[in-house]
Length: 198
Length: 338
Image (tube, rainbow over all chains, first blue to last red):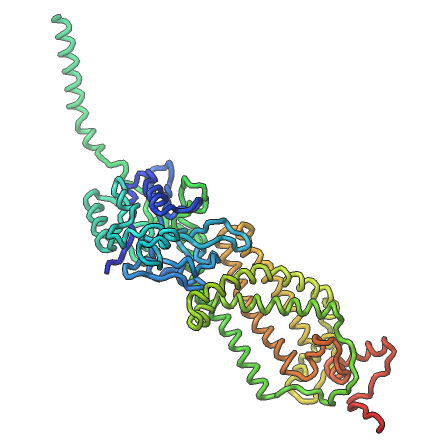
């Protein structure tokens, strides 16, 4: 099986927010939750870059390590998913995640945050693939349909890449060699303990 | 007509000349202005502890502006490492110590036997506060411990669905019972603080190990002996620390940054583990560990001989105040005339 990863080539991102919108629309993500977001670093300064970020589906995911009810699991494609039926909305995963991926329907005092929601790499949850129950809780399951995550698929500059880690790393490496520069594979060192050497 | 043509030719010449002369300069300037970009590696290296690689965000959630917060992984590692270890070692260690102590000393009996006469040790308010504190603490400790080790201990037994339900109720219980716990903590503090100020008797008591390890040894004490004072101050200080950090955890807005919230969580969980171990010892000595001790908090009436052995000065003062004669020391229960 593949080891699925995201890679945002910040030298190509034009901050159009299409990935953010596509994700929200595809999964009917509730108000206040953005499974994907675009952050602009050094805004207005020389060398400004925008990075599209979501759950990085880490190796040894810290969210899974701190979850009191052990509701996270890793699929055969190395996608980190969780069960909203088991989740108690304690908020630990939010504080464990280096990428700000876990979010809650309500900003919570008294632990009234509701069930955690995060990027599923367009591959649903523990329910039967492409079932209505799965769609309501986690959104569509494009991986089960043989498609890649919509954010990357519709990226107009092909900045956001999704797919097997080795393949997208090769694509990125080739780009950096051809154009002579690259700002790095954002988040890879933190998520996978390694980055792409060119 | 000719003039216009000449003019045009001159203009054309000027343009061509300009281009020809300027060309080398243009070639020299063929640097891609986008090439110098912000590098993730540099930003990560420049990070101070607790900081994040952040930028501008267009969505209303300002926290989403933090792109990468590598320190969050350290908190996750601490939670699953140090915090878990401290809790497991403290609680299992205390249980092992108590089993060892029980095998060495057995149940501590009233040396002179029960007298059959009782004396009031704790009034209704004191007992109510104690049991409110005790009941809420036990539920808070169990539900809190469940968040830390439940997935290793209970989850394999009851299965994911039941464990999720238990933990969800446990979380609600933990969040709401924290408030009566804090109320009881305040009542207990007000009721007993004057009796718990350390004095010279405590040094003597501690030197003799409270007589816990020697049969027949009963160092003098007032209402509370040094061991009880240690419990009292552990509960007050530990309880205050748990209350403060707990409120911060409940209201993350009050806690400030997420690094501060994480610090409060670590303190909360470690203090809770140590407190649980201390309270296990307290429960032991107040129940199976010592004859006559439970009555103090049960009915509030303790046997006079028990009181004389463990709180000699207190019982003398109290009996004198009530105008009752002090029973002869070590006297067994008076036998009624046949």
